[in-house]
Amino acid sequence: MSVSLSALAFLAHAVVEIPAAASFVLTPQRQLSPAAATPEVLLVLQNLGGLLVASVLASLVLVARGHAIAPSTRGLLALALGSYHFFPCRRAALRLRHDIGIRGPQGRTLGGPRVHLVVHLVCLALLVLAGLTDVIVARHE
Image (cartoon, rainbow, N blue to C red; front, side, top):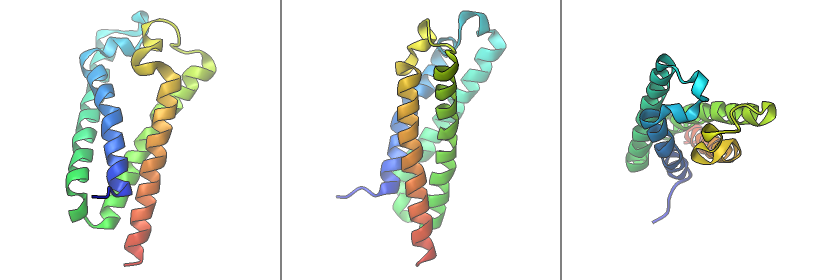
């Protein structure tokens, strides 16, 4: 059984975002310095965790049922999810460049900003490549 590029990309997104979603929902304070972890900010981070849970569930549906979805639609969904990964890449790069939240527990959360940058770049590349491939294939059918 072969796995399509889009299924691999959606699965990569799900695998990467499951621990992130759990972290944002269950321990949002680990994302911030203690001074920044106000109750309101923690609630916003938990909302982000909820969005990540939804994106994981959508990705898993696309892995399981992607073959039944038109390639152009599947491709556009991959591109949409890929666009999300730009923002964690940006956050990680800015944290590294400006030494933001590198020390303390938030600097080690889920591997820290270096790991985040690499992992999200891989997801971004996979989802964009899968999305463009599916959209191009759909145009030639």
